[in-house]
Image 1 (cartoon, rainbow, N blue to C red):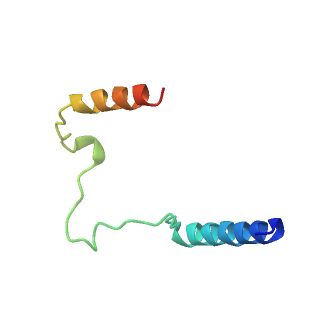
Image 2: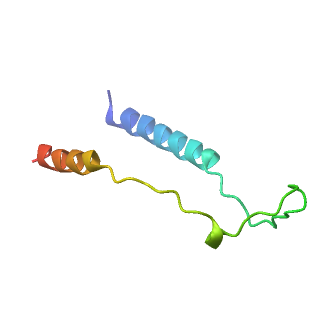
Length: 71
């Protein structure tokens, strides 16, 4: 395969991936949220109960194993 053809295919592929990423990127615009349309009064974030999460000790072991496996 000639170098010019490979460069052209790479350019077309890169532009395709870029256009697909741009089309999939959905950034919401600022909007006014109205509680009247939902039928209930939402609770403020500061008063919501925090879910109790348990630490995952296997995750730390997994991260250590992954970092040691790359050496």
